[in-house]
Amino acid sequence: TITRQQIGTVERALQIFLKLGLVEVLDSGTFYMSNIELLIGQSSTEAERKRAARLQNKALSALRTSGGHLSDIRPPEIELELEKEIEIKREIEKGRSARAYGRYQNVFLTDEEMADLQASFPTVWGQYIEKLSEYMASTGKRYQSHAATIRRWAGEDAKKTVTPSRNRDYSVKEDETV
Image (cartoon, rainbow, N blue to C red; front, side, top):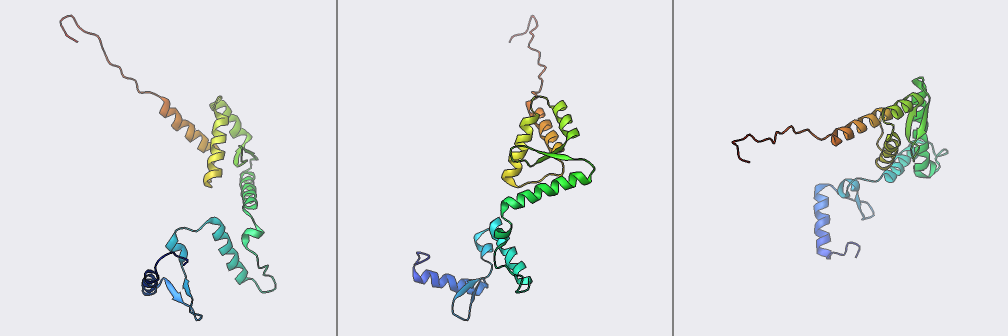
């Protein structure tokens, strides 16, 4: 009923899974798939957080176990805030204070880097900050230097816009035909 398949098909599949070691039969007679995420694809980030919370809870003593999941204790919004704080601390340790820019406040630039970008790319520096902010927010990707990434992207875009010159001579001499 659950799989919407014929009973014979399900029985054969379970026999194959048992032979391959993908399914275990518990004492209660129920079937258990130990590594189901390997069979159906990658697990979600939320699932990974909950799995990590369960492992932490097992390690904690019974008195300290809250019984909740990591996502209840530290939801994704708090995780993003922690990443921002870590990035700011990293910049401060380098002896420079960085500010957050972009729609998602995840592009960190020092005042010197910002001034340099504004001088180097006077018309498009804001667009590149927004592009980097959106890209990092949508993909979860992180960069060592946001200023260097913007410079690299601007350089690549500049190369794309330069058209190769074709110095062709279309002049015709007196006795030549076109």
